[in-house]
Image 1 (spheres, rainbow, N blue to C red):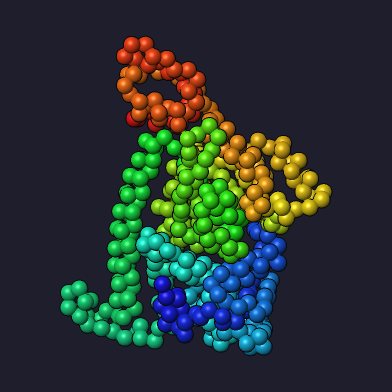
Image 2: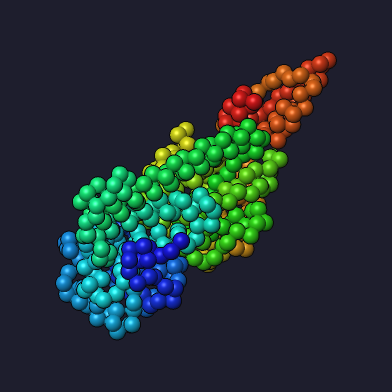
Length: 434
């Protein structure tokens, strides 16, 4: 997928270009993160798309300017710093209106990309499956639809036409917007088919005797490293924001179960563009249908609590509830190997007091046995003993009970078999649907 700058008619965004990262610091009370942490994340996003961050700046914004977001003096300072650093790209860690983006480009003589555009660029580069590319294209079209005025020089021309080519007097910008709307409608239809196919696959998995466990978490929390540890897979796991985009599923061994399915999903991030939340809803529905959600947290990160809040907010936006309203959850406190001394001891003690928390190091393997034991216990939570009578010839149903539940007793009497089995509420529903 080509760069958003190419689509907007600019000079193109190229890997290796120098970038100036600028953070508009508005109301700190609305953001639990420090300025330095937010600048680090913005620089990480820029690096993820191949930009070379030359300098980072933050400006206190008391009253956002409709024309440029920043004040006049601040824009002038940004222009001077960009020129001094030989930076061709200005990364603004905020959402910009099309007018603000264009005026900042005029005022700084640099290409400007905002947080939404930057995340869309990363997703566009990382999408590997046909579905992922469709989702990203839909989000990108939605984003670009309001930005046609940015730098296209031909949009004010009027055009005539016949029938579907456009009515008399239709401007080029109206025609382009209509083309975008038509393309978005086609993509939505294709994604609706994907959604139906996914629903069929989920329905098939519900009938299968294996629980599904979904990994969620802030981007770069270590989900893919943990996934590889548990499944012995080789999913891309780098110290890079959004290293994983397309969901991956593998089987794993869980104590007391024949096997389970582990799903690795895209990482969340603060201020995730609404276009992407909407576009990836079909993919993230896999999380809602899981038996258990493992929320992987980088417990060593200074903003781990704020990251947790962001993940929970995105989950809430997707309609994924907790407790009776959704799948059971465990918090996996990852990267404990990076903690030392009293900080490590205090954290381990806190985790030991909380039933829903497990500490691990996906990198070293520390705590993985304890994690699997907790997963097994969570999958069996609320389990009840059921006494069943089956035809003695129904070996398939008996095998299902052995793999999905805990068979406490079974005895044959003539043509029938009597079974006492402990099943979770979800598996009892699945059994009844067989």
